[in-house]
Image (cartoon, rainbow, N blue to C red; front, top):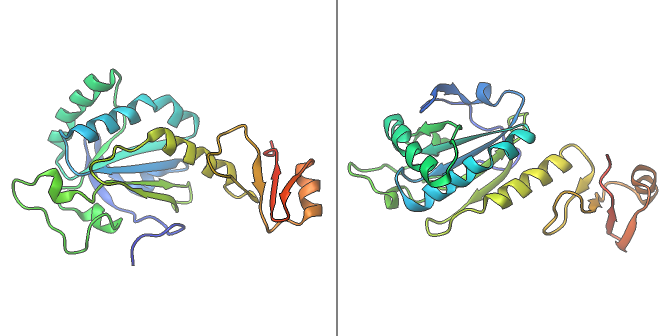
Length: 217
């Protein structure tokens, strides 16, 4: 069985370009985003790492740590970061896990259990290592995205999803399609109409089961 939403993420120890980490300790009391890539020095991945670097202030505002993963070693990660920073025109301050033996990729179900990379590996050999995991401070998976090699990830959407997860975390609300901060939220069906009015004030009954309200402060 693969990793599912609300599962506690595996706790692993791994080398990164910034030294060894133990994942749960590294997360601490923060939210975390783990985003994986098939190989260093590849074009789509370079644009994605650059996008993550450019959003450094936004991650910090949301008490969120970001960490990359690639199947190359730390020496390659250090060299690749120079390219990333040149492309993005900013510092890439987040660590990158060196998952040379695929141990982390397998724990997070990013590859088939029997997958191994050959010598002279190419990005195509690890094509399925291209996922995003958003993790809450209790170390549980809150969101999983997996993309094909040909489609660059939209990190504005990752940021939007993070906002929605933090807005609804432990609160009886949900967010509708394309929601962004500042828009109305959906009152959870576990809340009665009377409770909804008490908790949220004005409630807009779009449908008996679709009730919109301002997000509580």
